[in-house]
Structures are given as C-alpha cells and as structure tokens.
Image (cartoon, rainbow, N blue to C red; front, side, top):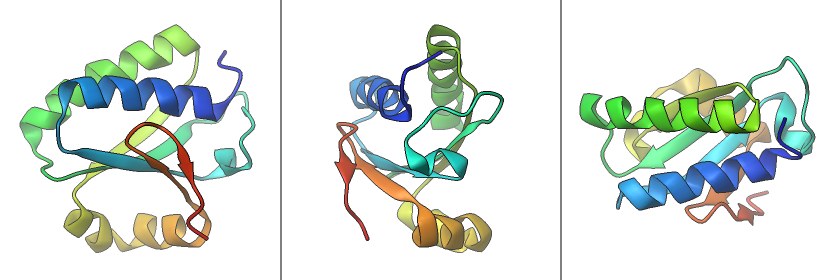
Length: 112
C-alpha cells in the first residue's frame, strides 16, 4: 500500500501530464483529506481538464487501474471540466467545503 495519499496523487499527476496537455490538477475529498491512508476506503479525486469526453475517459481508466495496482489502493476518480464540475452540485459542494487542491504537478495548494 502507498505510504501517503500525496504519493498516489503525484504518481497520477505525472501520468496525466504525460498524456494530457489540458490537465489542470485535482481535488482530494472524502476521508483521505487528513493525508493518511485508510485501509478499505477509496481515495476520492476530482480531476480538472479543459476538455472531458469519452475518448479522454477511455485513456484515464487504464492509468487509474495501473496506479491502483502498483500502489495497492482503490481510487474513485471523477474527470471534469471546470463547468461540468460546478454543475455536479453534490460533489462540487463537498469538495469546496472540505477538499484539497493539488496542482498539475501534484503539489498541495492551500485553497482554504
């Protein structure tokens, strides 16, 4: 299992940056916002892209699967554009309340 959620996010960010020029970063939300690994709990992430479509999702899922296998974690990943993210009110509101933003390099940004 990964030592920290930050390690998982850095690995995902590196992979996304390699493939997608429009990757903007991601939000961590849910139980893992404390930075600790919680066995049996999925890491919940909302990824922000300029464009989000079926073709991109088809490229994202193998990346998620590889990171899950390599780091022995489970990830719930939600790809969005800024506009579609704001429209998903349930997740957007939770993320804006308690989420943590990581820039495209995987660096934690203090958004509070």
